[in-house]
Length: 585
Ligand SMILES: *[C@@H]1O[C@H](CO)[C@@H](O)[C@H](O)[C@H]1NC(C)=O
Ligand SMILES: *[C@@H]1O[C@H](CO)[C@@H](O)[C@H](O)[C@H]1NC(C)=O
Ligand SMILES: *[C@@H]1O[C@H](CO)[C@@H](O)[C@H](O)[C@H]1NC(C)=O
Ligand SMILES: *[C@@H]1O[C@H](CO)[C@@H](O)[C@H](O)[C@H]1NC(C)=O
Ligand SMILES: *[C@@H]1O[C@H](CO)[C@@H](O)[C@H](O)[C@H]1NC(C)=O
Ligand SMILES: *[C@@H]1O[C@H](CO)[C@@H](O)[C@H](O)[C@H]1NC(C)=O
Ligand SMILES: *[C@@H]1O[C@H](CO)[C@@H](O)[C@H](O)[C@H]1NC(C)=O
Ligand SMILES: *[C@@H]1O[C@H](CO)[C@@H](O)[C@H](O)[C@H]1NC(C)=O
Image (cartoon, rainbow, N blue to C red):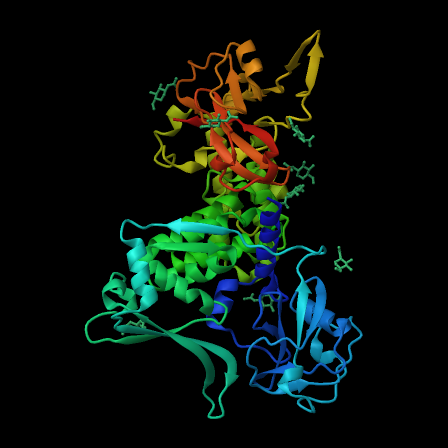
């Protein structure tokens, strides 16, 4: 587990590393499209994400740095410029592959506090008596600690039969009739001005590749050229071998490349499965950059599984998202999609309105009035308590800008609050299917309560000679419905988390697996026949993020093993949040 956590951290840093000084970034776009480097940019070449030969961009060329005067202070500047916390060590005399460009910097002296390598003192650009043998490298620190790098392997196996035989055919290359030329740009230009490329060739069989039309392996075509980022080049052979065998070992560091290749060549199953791996890393980024950029990448590649995984995480953890640096950079599209979701976890609907208003205000006049209206229209005003609605005119920052919309919404919400649903639905405005009359997952009183098993008297106690657990239990009282007319009509609930069989049998219950959460009411709800309760159990991991949401079936929800979790939670340290959700039916 520890190795895996380190790995997650590494992967996260890998994502952050490319982020640049603004918080928005996109690893995927970066690696595939080689955005134009800027004067003075640095990169690490030929190693890994956090290690490599130091190269600096000047006058249109990537060049190296000579080892004269190279030390930790200089390495610190490079690593910090690349958004690592710092340097771990300097590397001298290691061959990170052929360097052909200029040697830009020599006799370099940094204080160690500079933000850019080129602001350190050095002779002058390109003035040097060094050879490429003296090029320097660095290993950047990926966390504050000396972590060990590991990369666990996930084997994907979609094979049916003949997988091994087909693998052998690919490995041997016998009878191959279709060449794939893989090419990566180094970022420099040849003397004649064309981009310098490095690459290899793989010989394949047309009949195998023709299953995927995007390879163009059809009659009359004998080769294709595939442009690919240098970091993905080593994984291309595994990708092609997958086309033969339908098996591949995926690591977190190869997942991004495999996903992109699968997308490029329309290999849907591989794309979806590697996309699922990404879901495991979502909780690791408290800054929410990973989740947001993965969502955008998924949207762009049409990977609906990945897209849903990202947006669901954002919906469940919406409150933290609004406090993160990624918040003000959310696209209109993403915010709009979040606002349509019923599984948005928020204290209450008014909180949601306030966050949207502040998002719009922060964006200033960059969002059009139509866009603002479109976003505000997705707020479920009927879910806002009547007394808060009454204050909106004075408390809402956008009321005066969108007076008509607010007035109309507030009126509609008041109608909802004072009329029975059976009256409302005779009005075409109140569509039964409309989500605006259904609650989201509200976490404030009275709709929700929390049980933290260790804190809520779950300790082992000794009564006489007999040990027993006291099942943590909380009670809460909610109205029968969010609408004001039901305000005095209360339901009493009992929420508990069962952690051992003894307690289950003590209560005369059968617990099929443990832990088991129960949310039960003894009130008779039959006279509210048009209201039903769709309550939810939210599992919060280590008090930090929501990793799972579950329905109650016959008042109980089983929480068994990490395999059921939507997002991983180390050590299964859950906080149980019970949410009561009445809906008109
Ligand atoms: C990392 O390792 C180096 C040497 O191996 C040691 O000097 C340094 O204190 C370690 N740093 C941490 C944070 O453990
Ligand atoms: C396949 O052919 C189309 C149309 O000629 C072309 O646009 C595309 O780039 C080709 N794909 C590859 C991988 O060469
Ligand atoms: C938006 O605001 C900026 C500065 O507040 C101003 O310079 C610009 O003209 C405004 N643009 C529009 C379209 O109102
Ligand atoms: C509206 O603002 C007033 C004064 O700032 C405050 O007393 C009141 O509680 C606010 N109403 C809501 C619903 O937040
Ligand atoms: C909570 O209880 C479990 C066993 O019931 C124990 O393993 C765990 O360490 C406890 N956690 C805390 C934070 O006390
Ligand atoms: C979890 O579920 C599996 C099968 O669904 C069952 O075999 C196992 O005993 C359960 N674990 C606990 C602790 O109940
Ligand atoms: C339930 O709704 C139907 C119409 O949808 C209405 O005829 C009926 O009276 C309602 N029942 C109650 C108890 O409100
Ligand atoms: C979310 O916010 C809570 C409260 O501010 C904080 O304790 C928690 O660590 C945050 N979670 C993440 C993943 O940042």
